[in-house]
Length: 370
Image (cartoon, rainbow, N blue to C red; front, top):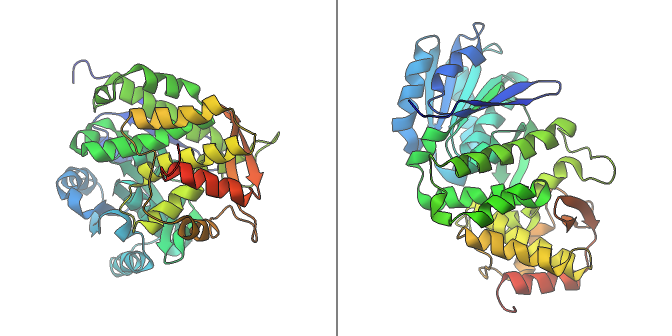
């Protein structure tokens, strides 16, 4: 299309390098990424996205035998039962280690599809076509896959890097406004942990200007992807950073409380909304611990709130959320570990935060105190 910006290619280095393409109408890039050695491709897509999945299936059908598998929508897809159904379908279709998986959908579809690819025959090729802001900047990049259990979110999973990621901005035109805004929760998080320019952009534009096709939304998406790429290249499997930096764990800023909120709400609170709340919470913990300045803690509420993301939530008691945080992946033994900030783009780990600070930060997040 005339006037459409050129594609942006973000390279992810490491042992299994791949590219993230950001642009428009990218499905025809799939055969070039999958290659000639593939005979069968499983297209795992969110069930409600059948109309978007058909053009992708048509592109694939020109080169491969296509197995299209519609999945449950949202977090309902991230279960062992759904993964098992996919494994059975791959087995019945005769998928071998030289075949591949393509995912089309939001973060939940990407997580589940990546997990299926990671576990089928101990790992087959996967390409992600994320359809939401959240999936573009978070789930599709970095190789983390996972499913949920009754005990919590993403407690079962594997690291499995994709062969490529195609962030087709045209797909965002079908996204409900609330879902687009929720995805920006992860984008703003990236501003706090690594790229303050993101915060400046958010603070300079009106929220209603952040629409599909707008240059500023594209810049925010690309900047957030760059943050994740830079982090995962240095620390793919969360073994730790250098010089006191938390490494890949920094991407979980706000997520300890966020996952607790998601679970307590029965996943009615969207992930990006929960991340906004979790970041407000952990910023307050850091402020109370004397680690973070009042102004930076307050900027969390301002930045997320400016976009229409929630900054208060009282849908569960402190005791319920605290119990859920105890099974967070960063917890070691009985000691809770939180990613906190000392300043913008200056993260560190706070091990064993004071219970009184956690409770007081909950009071702020729940809106019971100013």
